[in-house]
Length: 360
Image (cartoon, rainbow, N blue to C red; front, side, top):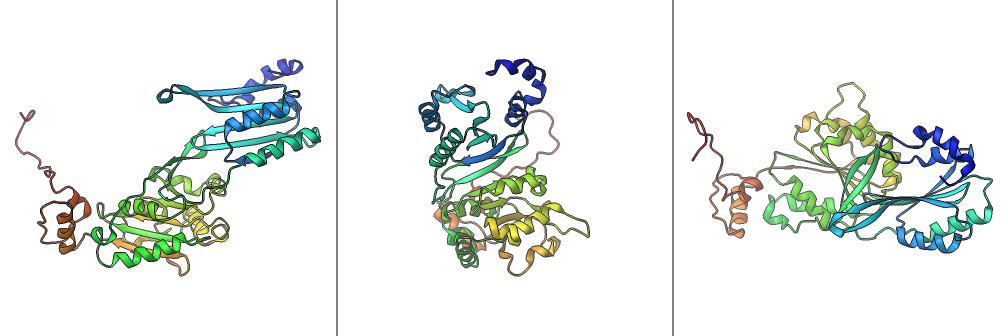
C-alpha cells in the first residue's frame, strides 16, 4: 500500500489483514508492516473534520499515506466519512471510526516510535475529545451489533409528554416520583421492575421517563437478550456510565434460575448492585410479563431494588375521565387498559364464520 518493500508480504497476508466483510483489521495490518503488535489508545467523541484538518496541518511533511472508506448518504446527496487511517509514520497510525453514532479515534504505535511525533499526535487527539452532554432528556439510544461489536444508534426527542394522573391509577403517581428521584440521582444504580399485561402502559411510561431524566436511556431489544451474558457487553458499557439500561420483555433474563447457572442474570445482578454497578452507575429498568413468583429472588434483595410496580387496567372512573379528555365517549363500566381506551373508535375484529372467499 504505502511501503513498497512490504507490498509482497502484505499481499500474501490479505486474508489476515481483511475480514469477511472486506473491512481492514488495523492491528493485524500494523503487525504485518512492523512485525510487532501495536500499543493502542482510544479517544471517543471525536469529530472527523477537525481531526483531518489538524492532522494535515501538523504532519504534512511527515505524512506517508492514508486509507479511507466512505459511505454515500442518498438523502443528503453526499459521502459520509466512515473510516480513515492516517499513517503518520511507519509505526504511528491513527484510525478514525464513524459507525452508527460511535465516533472514535484510535492511536496505534510502537514504544520505540519517534517520541515527538507520538506526543504531538496524542496531544491533538486529547484536545479534540468532546465533553459528554450534560442533559440527555429525550435521548434514547438503541444497542445494535455490527460485525460482532456493540454500537449505539441514537434517537432524539422520544420522551412522551404524558399526564401521569390521567393515564395511570391513583397509586402510580407517588411510585413514579420516587423512581424518577432515584434514577436522576448521580451515581445511582439498582433495578426498577415493571410488569403487567400488554397495553397497560409500560412502554408509554418508559418513553415518559426519557423526557424526565437527564441521563441517556439505552434500549436493549428483546431479541438481543442472549447478549446480556456477553463479556463484550460489559466492556462496551464501561464507556456508558451514568446511563440507564432498559430491558423490555426481559422474562427469560430475570426468571428464577432453578438451580442452574444463568450468566445473564449474574451479569444483571453485578451491573445493578455489584462492584460493576458501583463503578459504572448504570441503573437497569426491566419490563416483564411473568408472575412475580417466577422472578429470581436475588433481584428482590433489599438495597438492589429501586422500585417495582404492576401495571393494571385503569379503574372505570379513571378510564372514563381519560376518554373524556381525549374527546371520546366514556363508556367503561369496568377496568380498561390504555390500549383499549386509545382504540375506542377502532372496530374490534370479529372473525366471520361459514364464509368462503373475499368479502366484497
